[in-house]
Image (cartoon, rainbow, N blue to C red; front, side, top):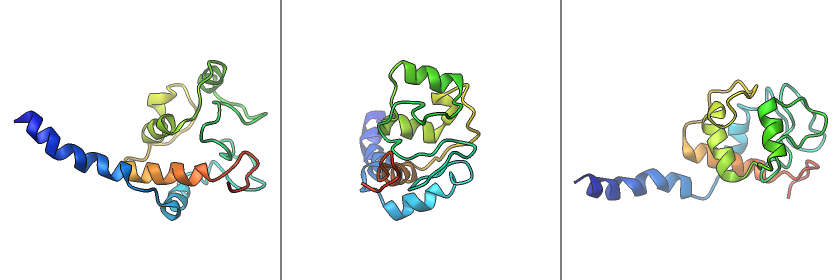
Length: 130
């Protein structure tokens, strides 16, 4: 019975994450991040680093920003902010970077995280849109 229930419910749980991301919704979700982060041409550090070029970038890639020791160590170990890592981080930052400085409770809906990651993916390291 449990296996049958899993087969029925699994598509319902996975479907939102597999849907095409909505860039407009991602931009709207980014408003939650704007107090601490910026994207686009001329983005400057705030409490957090600019997020231009963050998708698939090495951890701690913004020059001169004072990252936590966890982020620095991750960068030195070759970790990158791929979509899976960003998704996990946006869900629960402390689960990915336990000693990180980011004070954020996470984004629970998978579709919202996917939209936000797609929105961030548009920005090249120089802030231009890809």
